[in-house]
Length: 310
Image (cartoon, rainbow, N blue to C red; front, top):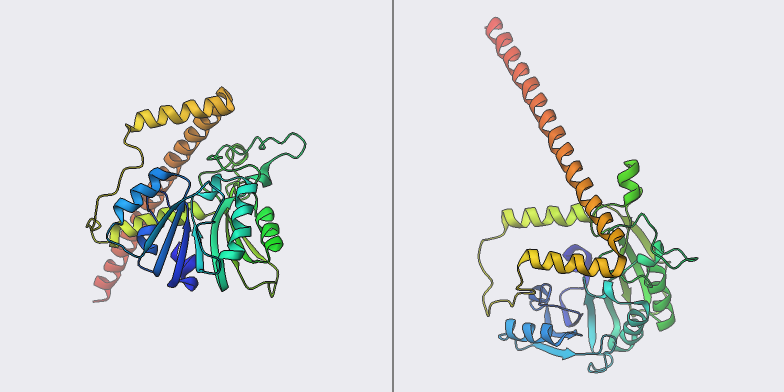
């Protein structure tokens, strides 16, 4: 996330909406003089309060999922929300945008991660189109256009929007082997500012390789980051149940929401990805062995040529 928000950091006062158990709070707390956390879940706020008890510059508020009344107007420099408002419907996100216009100081900005699933909703039936198999509880009433219109109505400038995929590909891509053109970009990163009318239209970019980007970041972090635990109180687990129990609970929720057809679609998607992984790994192994053979042959011929000349 840092390359996307680095021009706004550090900031005097940061507002994080939906911090959860502090996954991003642990970084934002070092980049602000005052950090405000607002979450719908009292459990999450209590966990953050316990985890960051040593940080006296953090303030904690529990809201109703759409209100920022606890925060003083014109007191925030940067608003941040990641992997939280993607589940919020258009009315809740629009309410946050309207209030952000009042809470931000002149020149303040925000980075919001929200749903773009509405782009894949059939307007005639109001159903998500059949080829979108990975929905991940995204809000079907929210899209990049809805966010941009909300900013315009609130007097904010929507500067840029990055449309991304969250997991996998679509059923259409699996069927027709269209790896890049049929990836449902169900998420959006929107950057806005309190500078009034934007000097130029909103810049919008489609990024279908976001999954590969964050996976590579995880690999690099594991390689170069020091193996030490964060100081301070231990982090409360988000869910202490056994992984098998969590998966069964998730499958039960999917069956209640989408029926057995939804379960079957996800199983087929997982099997397809497993098959693609096996094929890709086998192809890489074959190519690697071929390169090794040609390199060995080249070195032997070069060695023989040098011996003949000497």
